[in-house]
Amino acid sequence: MSDAELEEIRKGRLVHLQQQQQQQQQGGAGVPGNGGQDEQRKQQEAEARASILSQILQPEAADRLGRIRLVKASRATDVENRLITLAQSGQLRAKVTEEQLKELLGAVAENNEREGASGGKIVVSRRKGGWDDEDDLLDL
Image (cartoon, rainbow, N blue to C red; front, side):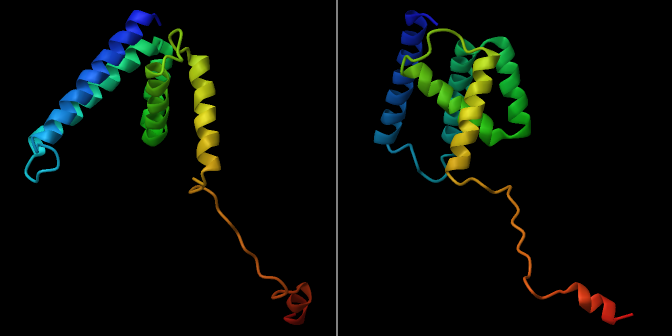
């Protein structure tokens, strides 16, 4: 990714943030009954994210990220956020390949495990001393 592309991304983000700030100053943000503007803002954010991701991902990596979104949207969002942060900070020198995306997925998964996102674990607690094999023989 060239410096010119990164600069273009940064300028787009700056314009977006300035628009948000102007809306907040005008009292447009957070007002009940403001659903149209909220939807428009969400649509603009989604378009901006898609634009940035299309610039920093190779097609194979973008396909993999799309498949991940189908299975686990939260994981895909975490990876997208990290990719966008890396691009905005200038740490990406070239487009992200599928192998690099796999490594990033592994890092995000490890980070989630460390944070205690163990919603999928099952803990089995067994009784101790309550059952005995000899009790079965007495029934005969």
